[in-house]
Amino acid sequence: MKKIIIATAIALSAVSAWSEEHQSAGSYELGVAAGKDYGTHENLTALSLGVPIGSSGFKGVLEYAKGRHGEAGADVTSLKVAKEIFSVGHAEFGVAGGYAHSAALEESGNGWVVGAEATYPLTKKVSAKLEASRFYGVGSISHVKANVVQAGLVYKFD
Image (cartoon, rainbow, N blue to C red):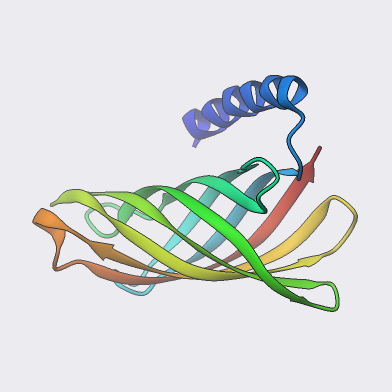
């Protein structure tokens, strides 16, 4: 977890420097979440960094989920693109999809992740987030499929 925090701090520093230079629309986001992998029936914790992609309304999200516990579960790193589809009141609903790499003790490989997310602002900078996604393994782990549900907080900074 310490390595994740250090890597995220370095990434945030790079994003901050890039944002000052390019001034793209939108907010950068740092998220923490906890959830359950219903494929392995293991709990997970996740750390994510969201970066707006120009003024398109899309954002790129890099996420690391720690879900391996001893010999069970998997750690998953994913690179996703997310987009808000609609909002109701203050709540925002969107979709996400992208590439994922699963690292389990007995087998590792790549796959795709697709899902939906909902956020609700708690303060000007902090939102609650609920995400449900599906992992589809490809190649050597094509038999691996998992439903993941996670909830957490997202901190937005400009």
